[in-house]
Image 1 (tube, one colour):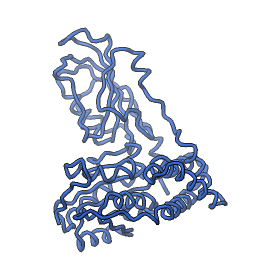
Image 2 (tube, one colour; image 1 turned 60 degrees about the vertical axis):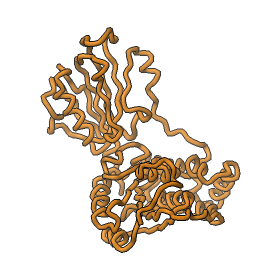
Image 3 (cartoon, helix red, strand yellow; image 1 turned 180 degrees about the vertical axis):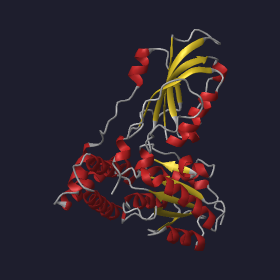
Image 4 (cartoon, one colour; image 1 turned 90 degrees about the vertical axis):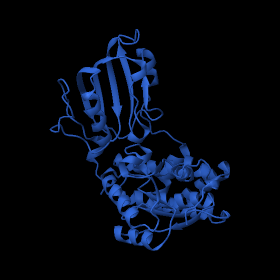
Length: 367
């Protein structure tokens, strides 16, 4: 049963001057940790801190009073959000930075999803501009996706199929259908579960139906392989019972013209055996597209490390996907992957970037 506690866990208030790392006595949530901190910062435009994309963090800052010039002293209020381990590293760095004094963590708490996903760092000098830019949490999406989720766990499965076929006819594209209808429907199933409007059995049933419908739609599509295609393994993380993510990932890999192998390993050993006895240029590992599975992120990191050691290919590319990554509860760095995609439709570009190439058709396999 998915843990519900971590989605609403709340850290305790930290007060007083910072003296290094976050107080280890403070109870921290497993994921979605956020820190709002204030302090005096000696402002110099050339040394304004940046957060690396690989840290999985994002932040905004607001000075009081507004910036008046280089080298001036101002009090800043800063919000930092991201995975707990990355936050702890950044907090430690900020605490030890001689440009900062009187640093105080005003609040430490968890959230089910991030607020700031479009940039790694941003500075506001106007309160009204800052307020206007803060996005409000929303579960809104394509109305068809919400209705599809409801029908998929209802008694009339054929109504769900009809709705999906109608959405496909309007979109004219499996990619659009995946990103705008199928995946949002899967996430809505998770939201229904989170709100106690259905059980995990219903979530699994709904995902199985969506998976079946998607296979029916894509059955007539057989993309051509590239002349020298990548060999790609698509699989859910062992013991992950929600397989829709792997099914959608396989469709994306086939669409890219790659030699695609789909496996559903029941155990870690089974997955290691697959990569030890077969050559793969890349592997896509997925978690549930509906539930956040934050308690499995540490295990995913260990599994990826083990897969690399077992692989015939010493330069194996590993990309990951799932609700946890859509909600930005973890970055590729947190699980030791080379790439992450928030939608299965981004799998090919994620693999391509990991190979250092923006074009999936021009990747040279190592085999």
